[in-house]
Length: 104
View 1: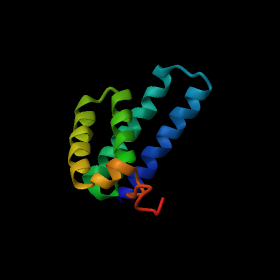
View 2: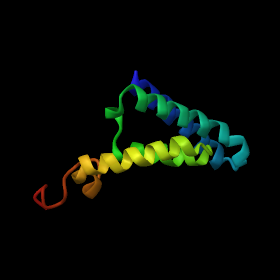
View 3: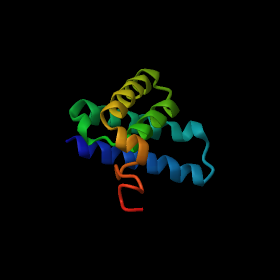
View 4: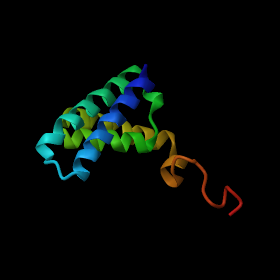
């Protein structure tokens, strides 16, 4: 279920981004950020293992835009814990490998 929640959250972000590209006001886009934040939180509550560092950053940004400080703080705390558990991803991105690790 968590993956479904993430897909829904990302869909709402896409919708908000499309409206931004059309120069629709932030006040009209805000509801999409709010929905995305709700779905990110549902995903986290369902199974936090579906998150990557990039996805956590998206959740933080989305909840900030939705003016949901409690959820934003929840994801910031999760990010701190996640970085400690996944230092390679923090250092090199989702691939988890640096150029030296890849023979570069």
